[in-house]
Length: 149
Image (tube, rainbow, N blue to C red; front, top):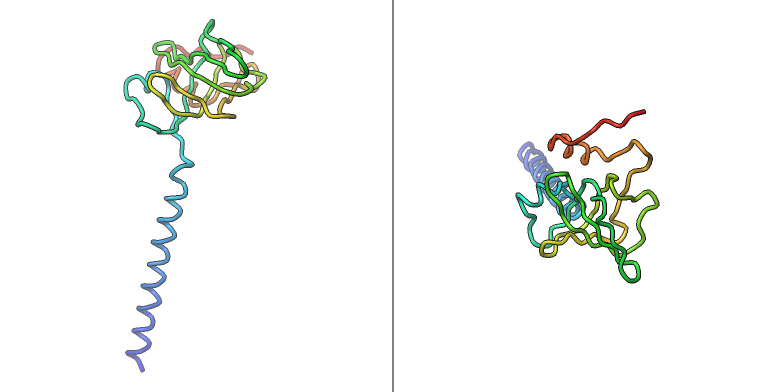
């Protein structure tokens, strides 16, 4: 009788452990596509992303680089004051998108051009806000200036 209880207890522990390992693996696999790394233009130039890797590119929209093409195709350049990355976007830009303003774009590199996903452009939401990743990257480059109130 004692041997049967011990065997049953070990079986339950092994089944539970197997289910835990399986569920952890499935959660990790499901989150694989949901994790997007942030990179500045300098990081993209020094350590190019893998082919087809989706990531967030952040910095400032370079002044004078915004070009509206035919239809809703838009090209501009994101800079961190030391490197630049050309961006192509197909869609409607956020109302607060402007040259010289902070921006984060979600997409992937195709050659030397960053292709932003539809609805993949995030712009600042007021005159003092800039995404934390952009501020950190600009501070790292030594070009960040605190906004005045």
